[in-house]
Image (cartoon, rainbow, N blue to C red; front, side, top):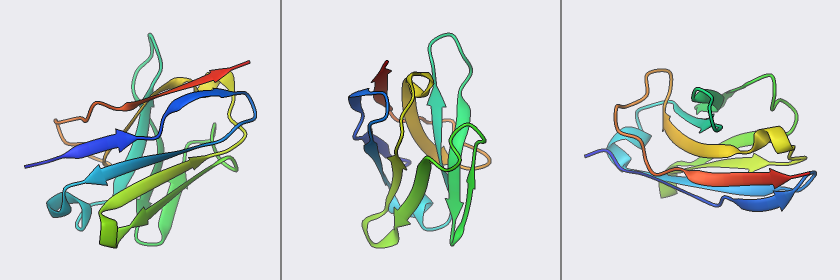
Length: 114
């Protein structure tokens, strides 16, 4: 059974930092490339970053500010977000990449105030 539990969101001022965590069930975590996605109000869900082994990819809008990493021993993937901007405000989710599972976790809300 797929389980994805995101945490670490919150309210932060522009320029601040947050670290998101995603605990995934082992059956998917050890096999798949994992990604962080986000969905802002009124917008489609978009990929923010993904990681597979030592390879990482980032959306242009977050390059140089966000860092994705994973701890295989803990079945956890992280997203370190620095220099946050108001346009980063969204609900953040983790899931498989590039083909997300139909199941999505509850996500974690990130709100950046100007």
